[in-house]
Image (tube, rainbow, N blue to C red; front, top):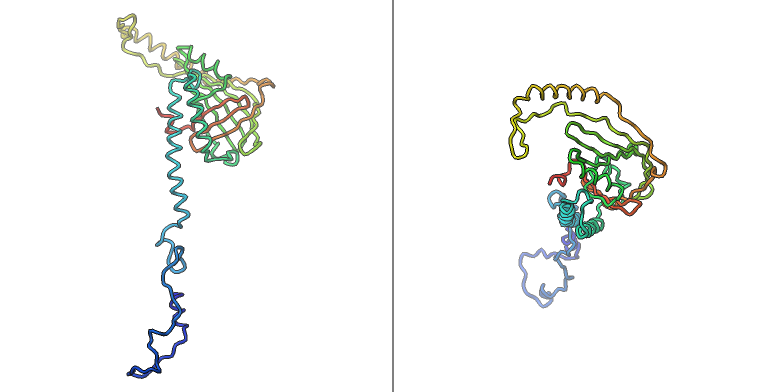
Length: 304
């Protein structure tokens, strides 16, 4: 050690006499003025040069960062959970009250302030995949949402956006379902990166998907009508025949190609600003001041 080396370098003469007698010519040893030596380690004293890192564990700085991340993550998760819970009963924002909208905007602002991905367009792998729309203030979608709520036999199952950063494409899709079939309306677009947060989107075409009919119809044993139960067993044969016909029609329609249509030039371009992004939640702001919140397909937050 350094302290031992200092002691070894100190100039001393050794007496080889086996017996020493006190003598005035020889002052007591305890009166020799040795240089003061301190063995107290300094606060930053380290033995890293001779001891392996595995024995001492991670550096203090790294431990501090880990602690800060652990303290931050629960706060972000809590905000995300509160935000998603606030969407309940709003029909993706269409039916949200003024108070609920204000609460949602406040939660969105708090999450944007803690955005873990300050440059989303430089983290395109996080943007990749299918995102499910759970809330929007985009008025252009409100007529679609209201019609979906007004038609009892037609349900608006899902509004989604699929991003592929390899081909720089965006696909917006609306999925409808009815008693016997499902179909979708899709718009295909290309995007260009314009800033660390902003992309420019140019729509190319729309597609009406081929209806996918249910090839198996469940026939109940009875139905209730005007407070009375009606036994359907006498109609089993007829309903089975209808089921077989529906299955045949389903196979015929499913073989038809989807219908494509062009998008007017006035609606062909838009831009999108991503203000929050992690591996399961994305918050975007559009060129009309609208806000959209989307969850990655498979996220636990999609489960009520």
